[in-house]
Length: 451
Ligand code: HEM
Image (cartoon, rainbow, N blue to C red; front, side):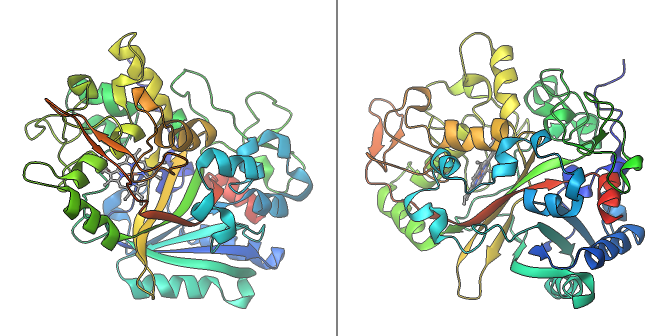
């Protein structure tokens, strides 16, 4: 039987949507404005013609020494698409952007996380982000400098360098990059070994890439453009409105959030509150520092082959732990394991973040994720799982890593027998420094933008 997703048009999907470029440890992210449209278009066309933005077709081993990805904000697409831009065909969270006041409240971007304190992303001056990946930091710097030559028509708004840590651990000291959804129809999907692993992690391509059925069997909403747009003849007719062109096909929505981590305070708190047999750092994160599950011994099955059904009360992995709130697996309701998993798997994200360190010593996670629906996936996780004080029977606590505590803040419950532990006055160690929503177009849509 033909598998859903096996028709993935890898050649038309940007490489970043298929893989995280683990072989290219250094990255530079340039948030830019478009200063001169004709120059920008010529530059973009050059990148595409020289194959400098690799598609998802290029295998990891053939990646070469560097690669790029490019994505645009609503303001950037509006600028480039001009009268062909159909605002109403893009989702409202994308056109309004991350800093719309109601959205800030929803995401918990308030108080010290509020946009007024951000370094970037508040003004409407970002049109896109160029993401460069290479073997060495110096190469990445050169790639960004080259892009910024006046003849390319770009204006720098901000740049952030980040990398994959050598020991695979994010700044708080925990192994990262373990649990990812596996896009059905990709080579990683073929590599899943057990039926359980497939049930847990193989996700319909349309949850991440537009143009394919999603977890409900429907095609995700795809932005359209007017056929009047130069170059749009290379795009397929829109599936719902064939008189328009399907601009979104093979694209994905990209979320970027710069999350500064106060490592010293985190480690001091963990040391002060842990004791023999109880590491509160691991309990708050929900995995061991080496990435093993707290729910059960996964050494035989692989670190991601487990479900919290085996640990309903959270005596292994607390219910409020970061990884459990971010992906509660089959525990979202009691109807049946399968039905519950289906529900929670409609809120998965492809994480593509890396670790950064500023010149002034600030460290943190440059969080990036891809999804077909920012509101149903990223925003749902942040608002309805991480920030929900009443998540799965808890009361008055939020995700201790990525949530924003309000009111009766800073509580974290560690279920245990015979008595649970309740941590009080848990500080916040993560501060949001900037962020924005982007669209990562397919390769043909990029070619159309370059016309
Ligand atoms: C500085 C902030 C953050 C830190 C230090 C952090 C750290 C981690 C670590 C160490 C893991 C476990 C390793 C893994 O499964 O890859 C993890 C998993 C995860 N995180 Fe975060 N994270 C942060 C922010 C976020 C945010 C903002 C979100 C989304 C709103 C998020 C969503 C997830 C998800 C979905 C998983 C995988 C859960 C699973 O499938 O089991 N994280 N994070």
